[in-house]
Length: 113
Length: 115
Image 1: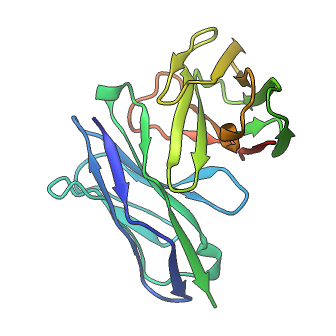
Image 2 (image 1 turned 180 degrees about the horizontal axis):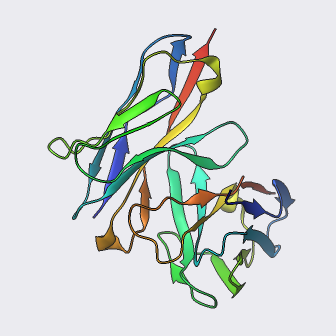
């Protein structure tokens, strides 16, 4: 069945460091891929998405490229800020499974000044 | 902007109590979802609904039921709360007739503690 695997956390970085959070997926068809962010005490909100192979999603300085050959959708940011401290979830959705969402377990990021 | 609201941010209940968690969305979405979020386990789907009075079990429905009497409202019911149901509960909605490219919109969550 469909699943999403993302790197274990927690991740602690200094301000302005480079961020990578790895995400790989298993899907039976052609999924859309998403990154969600959850700030402390809040629900999840969409950060970015990509709907087909080689698409790049981007938002707020974050980027992720849909790599079909490696079934990956790694999240990157060139220079993190304290305000980026949050939990990040990778997710997929595809028609074969009724467009149900499958989420990774989440990666907690803390950015220190 | 899509808005999904949940009736309580924090809730404390006793073992054996009947608990109602309410979720309301204001964008006429047909699809609504209840998840629970636990550390190390991510989000797990409890129930979802594609239409009024329609419900489908998710991955972990045991101990829960749902009600969808109106399109905008989706309620999660814990018939007899137990301590292992202490968790963060998240409601989400998705556009009607959604394709796999459509995102889900989440409420702020209800942190439920069962004593």
